[in-house]
Image 1 (spheres, helix red, strand yellow):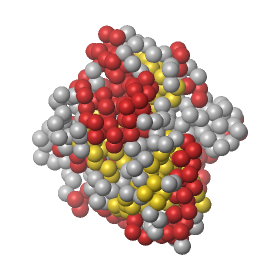
Image 2: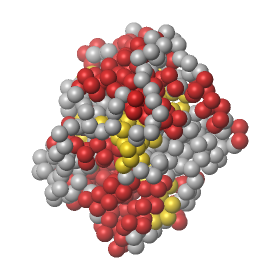
Image 3: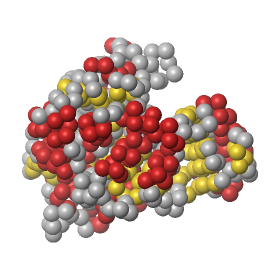
Image 4: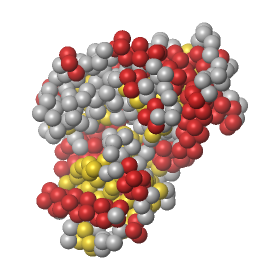
Length: 538
């Protein structure tokens, strides 16, 4: 960690916005270079125009590939498109619209030319498709989420409204790279004059009463702080305040593509991560000014919860509290609706699920795994340790199938209004019942070959039968909840576990670890985890 973490960005930390946009239009990728290809991770294609990794050619080709994918899949309805506040988002949205219009796709952008959170796009897709039309809608969100200001991002959401699965993104990326390699000859483009509009904000905000008890929040008079962190949720928080009469203050109503008002993240970069204590330092400093204070990232698919008594909550802690509260206070949900978590999330959630008598659906990293359950109501809540989650409406029907940081932030106010206790106080109560786990993610160096081997490693390849003094009870390479490959391994004992996964962007692998026996035992788990994984990799 740099000693500047948590300090306000300086002029030397800021991007040159004009230079970045110029690079978007003038640099052309060579897809024989891996770093310049279209590559979809768990949240779309991301990169910087400065690195020739997110440029006009990428977006034109990817949009054309999406058009062809829609044709292949028989998707003929409207395509909802939204963008966040990153500097590259507007030019990329314009490029995409040029291609969509030229191909005769009915594209719908924001009615007020505003910024659009990821959950608002997911909500729009689901709203259209549940209305009984003869065709189906899908969408594009132009965002790199919480990534630094130099980056751009481009996500495709098919008709289920959530992140596209690997089959779809692999096909789209492969075709996009073929198009770039072919000199963009297959790309159709036209002036985007035939673009329709959609009131993303109005439809989303008006519907919030069907998922959050906003009347209870209003009656409580809670003084709420909401920090959009310079992102797409700014106008949404203003509308929520006005529409529902909340005592809500926008902590920082500034949008600036350099994000000069942010405090630096752990590595000295500007990163709009609402779960990072360093990135949220200026927000946390105001925790005593509000009864509850929240933050969102640039596309509002993540949340950060700040309380006067506990500061910034660890995302795992808040997920456990949210689950405990929701399953006890949503009688319209199915009695057999499961609790969804990624396998690198805290085992506190396992213990809460068991106490509630609910099935636990443990899946690989990636919100896409929760989509089928959220759609049919068999999973009422899906959450990731990286502060992304969504849940069902009061009546047990689907709200969004992508992460929604706005409803998770509002839920913190509902919890305080209805229970009289902050989420951090409720988490302390959970630890008194189930124990207090120590959790941390660390990185370990790995070559590309080692990363590739780890991604395909079978649990049976792990020779160890003990971890930090406890017998190993499970060696997993596939998620218990759905049998899908986890792209790494997870090793479990009665009181601890670790999971190891290769990084998609750096020459490291990530070790997630947790112990219910304290910090010292966690360190022992981490040390042995590295030895176990290194031995398995050979």
